[in-house]
Structure formats: C-alpha cells, structure tokens
Image 1 (cartoon, rainbow, N blue to C red):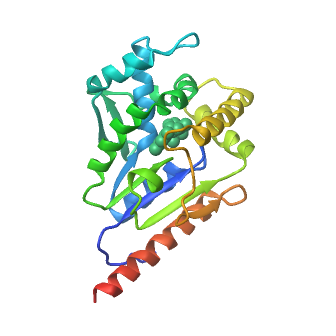
Image 2: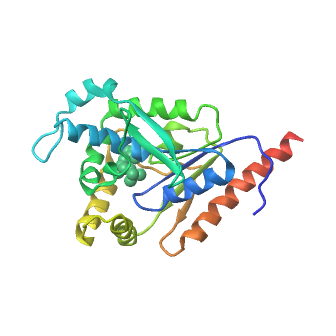
Image 3: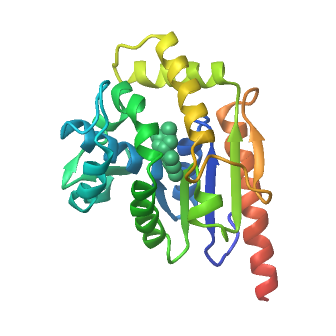
Length: 240
Ligand code: DC
C-alpha cells in the first residue's frame, strides 16, 4: 500500500455497536501515524466510575451526583507497548480491561445519554484532536465532535452478526458470556443510542455508509483506507 504525502486530516468513524469501528480506526491511525482516540472507552470509563462510586445500579441512577462529580474524573490515554494501542486511564489507573465488561456495557448507554457527561467528554475529545492527524471513533464524531472532519465513515451491520463478533471478542478475553445477553445488549444499546435526545447516533449526509454484514475485516479496512487515500492525494494535488 502506497501512502500519499499529506497534510494531516481528521477522520471520524461512527456507527453501531460492534461494527469493527475501533479495529479499523486503530490500524488506520497506525498506518497514517495519526493519533487514535476511542471515545467509547471514555463513556465506558465514566460509567465504570459511576459503578465504583455506587451512583448507578439496577435500582437507581444518581444522575445529579454523577454530574457534580465529573470534575473528579481525569481521563488520559497511554500507549501500551505490548498491545500496541492506547489504554485508557481513569484517575491514573489503567481501566482498559474493566471498562469492557458486560456490566459496564449494560449501564453505558444511560450514562452517555446525559448532556453534561457528553459536554464534558466532547470538550476533551476536541482538545485531543485540535491539531488534526487524528482518527476518532464513536457515535457522534462526524455529527458533533468534528462536523468539519475531512473524512466521515458510518458503519452498519445486522445486529445478530454484531452480537456474534462481540461474543467472540469477549470469549477471547476469557469472559464467561452467552450469546443471548450480548444480543440483547446490542439491541438495547442501538435503541438507546439512536433515540436519545442528546447527540443521537445518526449518519450525517456527508458520511460514507459501509454495511459490514457480508464483508470481512480486511475488506472493511481496505474500503476505508482507499477513501482516506483519495482525500489525502486530492489534498496534496491542490497544494501543488
Ligand atoms: O464504542 P463502544 O461500544 O465502546 O461505546 C460504548 C457506548 O458509549 C455506546 O453504547 C454509546 C456510547 N458512546 C457515545 O454515546 N458516544 C460516543 N462518541 C462513543 C460512545
């Protein structure tokens, strides 16, 4: 793969849960030598904080208290030499593993529906991408965080296929999970993420929609790589 000489751009990758956004975004960032930001990890870390501090469980959600305590939440990413990707740290503790649990997945949608939580995280995300040269994945990157991103991707896939992928991922990490609860979680998150008032999951008009139901990971990556290269090459030409 030949890489175009380029001015750096902003790449926004949005879409439904478990459509392979982060796999594509990580690899793309690595090949372009861009920063990668997993915004889902940030919403998950806030949720983990809420669980740890007894602010949310199946009986209640202390929204107001979580909002008041947002300034206590310090989120940073640090490169992990072994996995060759960024791990998320919550108040200086690596919580990369903890935030991927099914329990966090269960509570993350209500937490990410809160306007103040979104405001807090969007501000951090804009700061992280302010110099361009960033690949950011999430739900509202192309619509809210970086509406001027030069490249916007929106991934979709059938819910059953996404649940199967997620099941494999979690099983590989040694979690004991069953297909039905994962499938239900995928459906619930789709519903809440798409219907919430604050920054719902939507495809913007200028985003490229890619349905990954019937394509493999390599094909998925190549489609995005080509789109990125076209933009980078066009940018180089206009500069000449
Ligand atoms: O990408 P993920 O599945 O790890 O994200 C977890 C949840 O975080 C997802 O269900 C919705 C929320 N999220 C969001 O609301 N906005 C983002 N930019 C990223 C994630």
